[in-house]
Image (cartoon, helix red, strand yellow):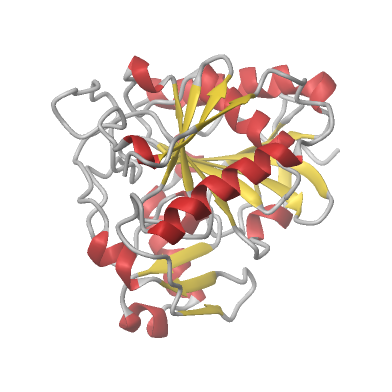
Length: 330
């Protein structure tokens, strides 16, 4: 494996509000493909056997990927306040060939292949890998998610995050970078402004998941405010021992439009992500459902998915009543 070397990219070479950089995208895709095609580091070759759109209002995308269920690394069991444990698997232990890019940025950030991919170019973003942080988001982790999506020309790229107690499988800070070619309901979901916080919104009540959303329209003037506000929200949830999932996505897959950062709190933590066919993590909450068994692929309906998501989250709005009040229509 050691014959394939990582590449260095300077993420500080231009401001996040400047033009996108095709070179960053070329490096991400070429380093991923080089390893995937050579069978280096991956537990399996990505193969989506079947995919369909579930009937209904929200157009859930359902894919069948059996190997992710049978071949992936066994998830760890840990909760929100679990400290980093160097004796367990973490991303300092990966084979060097799994490292795609080393980003020069505050903090220095490593891009690894996800060796059990869900989509093409599915990678892991590990801020300050040597610092050995537990799987709780840091300000640097929040910032690098925005900067990566702002610089990648292809607006189909998304970033996701599962906190401890919300389907995270490794207790070492990491986010998921992946390309999703299909529009998801969260890109067009109705948002209700939260009173007193101009850039924060709440998802409308009729949607499949309960959550909050920061909307970034002008990186030049809003990026710092959005990063600060998002971090405060995450910290408030952690103080209440509420696990959470995050998802960053452009509203328009062709032109970009607005950049949404969605936060899905959970009333009750789940101890770990069981190695089963369907889990309610950041992808599922946003409308992308990858299953590992043909039976689940055939039988899943929109109603069944929505019920599973609501059971996983609990009554978020009732629990946080008064903390993020929706602005009145008048």
